[in-house]
Length: 604
Image 1 (cartoon, helix red, strand yellow):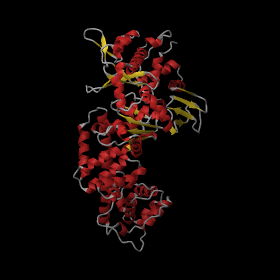
Image 2 (cartoon, rainbow, N blue to C red):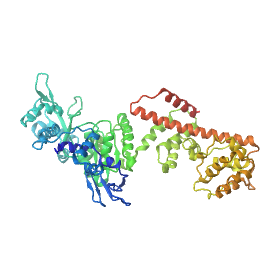
Image 3 (cartoon, helix red, strand yellow):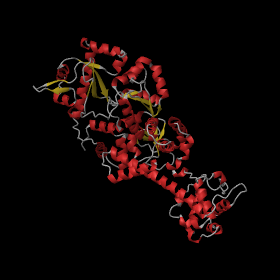
Image 4 (cartoon, rainbow, N blue to C red):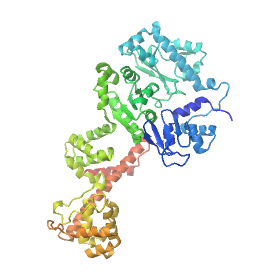
C-alpha cells in the first residue's frame, strides 16, 4: 500500500478541527481545557472520553483508544489508514497524492513553497540586521518594538532593489516559477523575475505547525499601498489562519483567553506591552475557520477592532460569526471598546499596558453590540412608546439568555426612556408562555375568580388560562363555540391544560357547571381546579354580567393569541430571509410580501 504524502497528512490536521469532527458523533461538554463525552468505542455511563482540541488528539481513559483525527475515523468507520485519510481529505477539499518514499517532501509543491518561504524569511531577517536595514530598524524603534519582539516575530526587511530576494532564491536552487506561486517574486514582461517586496518591513506568518506560510510587507515611507500581503497560494488561504497564533497559543494555554485585533502591528504592539495572547485576523473578513481556530485554544475571546467605522462594521460581522462558532460551546466573546481615533497599537503606546488591561476588564459581552445596534434603530424612529416597548421586549428575548431577560429589560428601558413594566406587559408578542391579556376597563383585582393554589401544577397559570376555565365553568356552552380558536396547546400549566382538554372532549354535552365538573370525573386534580374556579369569595365581584360580556373577553384573548402567532411567524420569516440573504439565495416575492404585511400590521 503506497504511503501518503506527509504534507497532505499535515494539511488534514490543519484543516479538520478534531473537536468539530468528533462532535458529530459524540456529545461533548467543556471540562477545563478538554472536551469530555461518552466513549463511542465501548459502553460506559460515566464519561471517560477526552478530546484535546489544542493538541489535536483524543484519548479514552476507559478503553485506552486514542490518537489524532485520522485514528478516530479509522476506529469509528473500521477503515485502514489510507482510506480514513482519503475520507477526511475529501471532507476538507484536499487533493491527495501518493508519496514517493525516496523524495516526496522535496517534490511536493507545498513542501517546496514552505522551503522557499523559509529561505525568504531568513533572508529578510538578515537584511534587517545589515546596513541596508537601518531605516527598518529605525521604524521598529519608533513603534516601540524591542530586540526581543523583533526576534520573536522574525521581523525582516526587503531592500529597495529588484533582485535581492530573487538572487537569494536562485542561489538556493529554488524554482522561481514556484517562488512566483508563493507570492515572493513576480514574472517580468521582459523575461525573468523580480522581487515582489521592496523597501518594506517584512512580517512573516507562521502556521501553528511551524512553517512560514505568508508575508506582509509594511511600507516604510508614505507610499501606497501601505501593506502588501501574500495572496492565496497552495499553502495559504486568507481567512484560514490567524497571525501569531503559533506564539499566542502558549499564553492562551495559561489563561484560556485570546485577544483578536485587525493588523500585524497592532498584534505585535500588544505582545510588546505584555499581552502575549494577542492574534490578528490579517485584515480579512473574519471567517468561521478562524473562529474554529480560536475555539481550539481559548475559552474566552476579546475582539479589539479599530475605533472607526470600518472597525465597527468588522466587529459587527465578527460578532455574528464568533457567536455562532464559539459561544454555543459555552465560551464567551467580548468587545473591547477603544477611544475614537485609536487602534490597539496607538492606544497601548500612548496609554500603557495597565490602561489596556482596564479596557479588557471593562469589555462588554459581544451580544450587547447587537443589542446596542437594534436599540439605536428603535431610538431613531417615530413610533409610539407602546410600540417601542413591545419591540424592545421582542429584542431582549431574541438576543439574551432567559436568565438575563429581567436585567436587560431594565437596561433597554433606560436606554429607550420607556417604563420597564411596559416591556413586561407586552411580553405576549415575544412568547405566549408569558402572555397575560386583560379585559378593557375591568380591574383584575375585581375578578370573581379567586386565586388558585399553586398545587395545581409547578408553573403558575397565566391569567388567560384562569379566565378561559372560569368562563367555562360559568357558561359551559361557550367551550364548544371557541373550541377551534383556543386550543389546549396554549396552556402552560399542566393541570389547567388537562382540565381544558377534558372540557373540549365533552363540549357537545356541556350545559351547566355540573356538566363541566362531570367531564373531569376521572381526573381529581382537574375536577378540584374547576370547582375552585367556580367558587366566589366574599370580596369578589361579578366580572361578566352575561354571555355577551364573556364572549367579548374570549374574543380579546383570541385576538391577543392571534397577534402572538403572527409575531412568531414574523420572527420565523425574518430568520428565513436572513439565511437566504447570507447564502446568496433569491428571496421569493410572496415571502417578502407576507413579511412586510405582517410587520406593518404589528406596528399598528
